[in-house]
Amino acid sequence: MKAFKYILVGFFFGFGMWKLEAISGFRIIEMFHFQSFHMYGIITSGVIMGIIITQLFKKGKIKTIKGVTKQFNDKDRTWPRYIIGGIIFGLGWALTGVCSGMMFVLLGAGYTVFVVFLAAAMLGTFAYGYFRKWLPH
Amino acid sequence: MKEFMLSMVEFISQPWPWWMGTFVIGGTVFLLFFFGKEFGLSANLRIMCAADGAGDYADFFNFDWQTQGWNLMVALGALFGAYIAANYFGGDYLAHISPATVDTLNQIAGKDILEYGKVPIVPGSDVVHTGIPQFWNIYSWSSLFTIRGLIIIVGGGFLIGFGARYAGGCTSGHAISGIADLQLPSLVAVIGFFIGGLIMTWFILPYILRISF
Image (cartoon, rainbow over all chains, first blue to last red; front, side, top):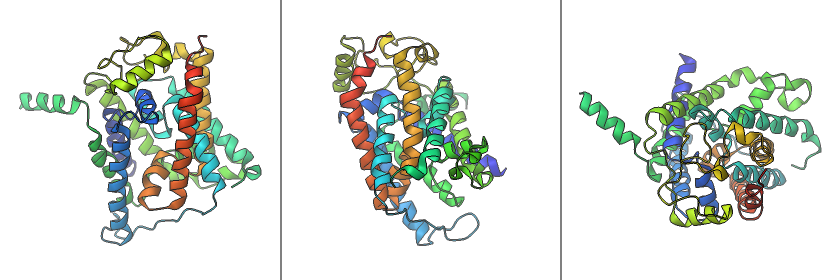
């Protein structure tokens, strides 16, 4: 039952992302060529809702299911990691046309070759964890 | 009743406009916050590494990953949701991209193989088998066994996995949740995403796509 509610949230998200064509590599090329508002619209509408929801939870207007005010953690303000890591992520995002959330969606939709993409992404994560202490943050 | 159900299926099956992101992303964020959790899907990669014993090799994976099982359930749910959407509510299975993008894609391919209004939803053939020109058949097992497909699928996956953890988040963690919480680091990360994405899309990807073996 505990797991079920999270599966339901994921279901809702995966279903919606497929219908919004956010899983389409063609849409990603279109976005990076600034040829349509579609992807920007999805992200912007998500962010606007996100800001409202975050504020409501932060101010305690909405409590969590356990009746407490949700805590938010500030991100560390050290810059190299966000710029360098961000650029590396962006290169991968545009290369395949898929981000980390969408790989689960495509895998579920039946593009089974994404198990290889997932394995490669795990290898990338492992490589980061392994070389972490030598990387500038 | 049956007619109503059929018309509902038809209604959901049509392509969704961008503003449906309000409900899809907003709803996802709301529910996860309500359950006291966060929205960040790339964290699952770290959890899966830790669960496979990566903690023996790097301290980064020594954390209490069992408490993060809920996030794996979100990813699992996304698999189910996509399966149902693609198989039962797929509609026309097209990517409704702009005419300008169709021109751009044909320029990259060097020939007019995609037609406006008839572009398949995904550049791959595992689910929708018809209407995918060989050039755009990227997400498939046959493509994986070409140099081009290997670079795109394995290379892209590696960069995503490495970059997401280095930056401390991906599109969901930084672009949505981080910016929604007005975190400056997240904005910087998203600017990084776009610098990387623009470099790849404009200067590198066309040459990779033209590799013919």
